[in-house]
Image 1 (cartoon, rainbow, N blue to C red):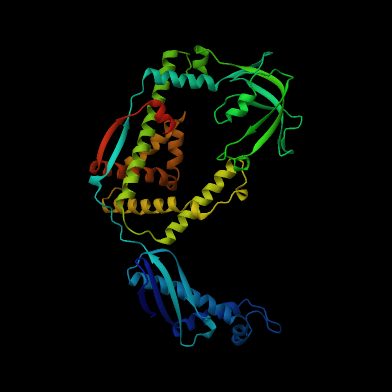
Image 2: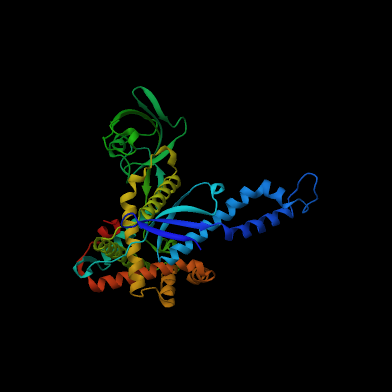
Length: 435
């Protein structure tokens, strides 16, 4: 049996020294060499007939490394269990070369353990819960958005104005050097569309098809992308066409386009209201959950293992790189540093440990009915909800996500019962904007 000693390096770090006797491993080494001898090919010997000494000469060091490495893994697991340690992350294991070992080999494993997780007094936590009811004005605003989403454009001979779609060719230069050009290919853009540079779009107002225009734009120091920040860019633009927006009438045909088969406008508005109520409920729940999670983090004062924070930092970095790629950007051109994600990683790790402790301590795991209710919620927005429900239940692993979310809801409700909760009326636009 391996000899074990454990040293406390810091609050969470431990150094474990383990001595493993070699004698019990010799039998495993001989057995492995015999297995190899049955198939190994040596000049002058038929397969399986080579002397074991020759097999040992060729494969002995490799086999010993395999057996000793397995012994390290097994002995470390046994030592951790015997000392009732909960290891966080992977241990750093150091040892002298196995070939130098005589009667035993010694290795040192340095690792972190999970902290004793304790959540403070949540009765002092203050949580603000948004409230609002969907009214007629909210339905009309949503209807207006739906109308604008279905805009079409028709060519006009007049000068361009805000809201028009124009087709242009463009050349951009900085310090006399061309930095961008569409060539002869025209590009479409809508003047004044959200997210566009106002000064650039303002310069495009007041020109007809066939006109040419040059102008300079000096971008602010905090402009994104950073390549243009504080720079003056000269543009040469040729107008190919100007088209004005045409919005559909809110009539029976419009209602049918939204899925109301009989084209009844009252039915259409009732369905819009139902959809809005669901969206409002979802957003309010998301805000309350975030407030609860923030309260949990604030009430938790334990130390988080560096290994867990490091793993979460890497996860956030990878997610950010994938997000950039999905948006058509090359992640290699943007310097993503661990320091950019460490604060969020620390918060995420602390929250996850707190949630696990609360769930286990108070038996808040979601039951089968709660998981099914979460799946039904997912299915609400599908034309054939039963198909999505069947998909989830066709593979038990697919239920992990709804089960986790339902469990989080249990934690949220548990915290709300303890915290000081105040309701605050919120405007529809504020909620929809995510402010």
